[in-house]
Length: 72
Figure 1 (cartoon, rainbow, N blue to C red):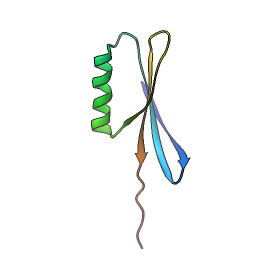
Figure 2: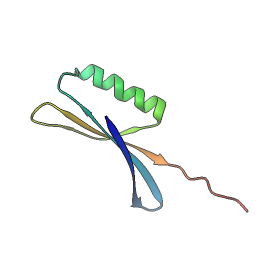
Figure 3: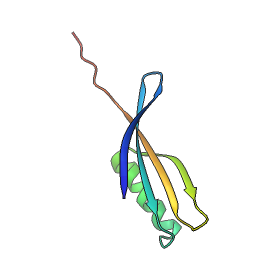
Figure 4: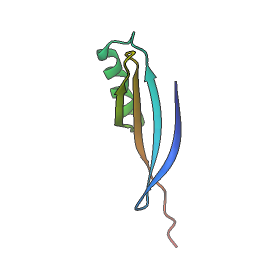
């Protein structure tokens, strides 16, 4: 259903992206509930939504990768 990867857009911030696809059979309310659940429990935020001519929703979620800095 989804696959995560890393990308560094610059300024030292790293993001993890997750692509999720929903078929046209899923009603809008169900898709909204699923995305809200991922946001609340996984720390994801909405990056982009594309709805194709065939009705398939392609959603890209993102979240910051927080790196621990060692102190001397």
